[in-house]
Every structure is written in C-alpha cells, then in structure tokens.
Image (cartoon, rainbow, N blue to C red; front, side, top):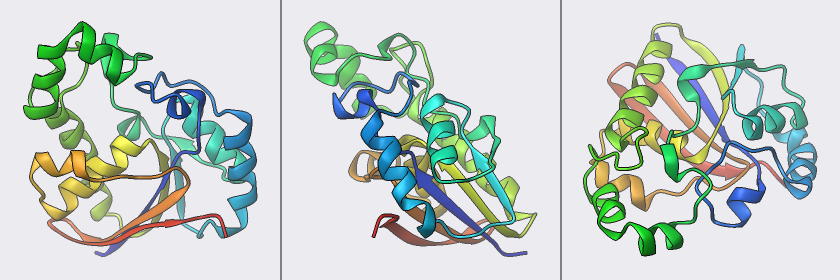
Length: 189
C-alpha cells in the first residue's frame, strides 16, 4: 500500500536563531507570524501529527492544523547539550563533539545517538507504510533529515549534509523499503 508522508520542518524559535542545540522551547514571534502566513499552502492529509515539543505544536497550531502529538517524531534528544551552541561545546568538549560528528553511534551528551534517531524515525516511517493514505507531520529538522536518511538508505554521514529549513515541506511517498523523495519546498509564497 502506498503512503505519502509530508514532513513540515517547524518554524523558527529563539534557539534556532541563536544557533543553539534545540531546547524544545516555543516559537519566537517571527516564527509564529511566518507559520500563520504559510497556513494556506499546507497540503491536506488524512492524518495530521506533530512532535510533542512546544516549537512543533505551536507551528502546527499557527498553520491551522488539528494535529495529534506523535512521540516517534519528537526532537533529537541531545541530553545535557540542550541549549548550548556548537561553538561553546567545541571549546568545552572538543573530543566529545568530534566523536558525535564522526561516529553515528556516539552519544557523549547522554541523549540519543544519530543511529538511535535514525532508527526511531525510520521505524515510524515504515510503520506508516502499511497504512497508506496521506500523513502530514510537523517535526524538527533533525527528524526530517533522519527520515530522509532512512527512506533513501543513505549513509549516516549524509545526515550532516542535509538541511531542513524552517517551514519547508519534504515529501516521501512509497511503501516499506521503497521510497521516493520530493525535497523541501517552502510553504511560504
């Protein structure tokens, strides 16, 4: 059975604008305004989901979606690094950052490794494949990137080369083990 999974990358938050590792905080005012302006461009779907963090829930609400929380698309758990900048972490913990960026099984922050994130996002995606229809989910950029990695069977290193800009739509269509990708188009016109 074919399913179309449409992933909307959440709007801007203060953490994103300040280049901090996501702290699961709320949208900032500009992000909320941009999401509200993009509402008319959101495609229809039989199921609408959102990651449970504030940024994603508020993006879904600003887009006018009645989305149910989906724990499988929650943000990447980066443990004690949450709220820090990569620049600060590189100064304080250079070896840990190097391991995190080069070893997909590393989790020096005490949260999820890239492998664990990819497995979670991939498991969710494969679970949807048996349902068919159209599913729309608002998620953080790391989850969107991990879903793309899984769908296209890309090597883990490709994660660091993908970008999921705020308020872009990434579409995956297919079925378990065979996916096609339509790369993130902006929702704003």
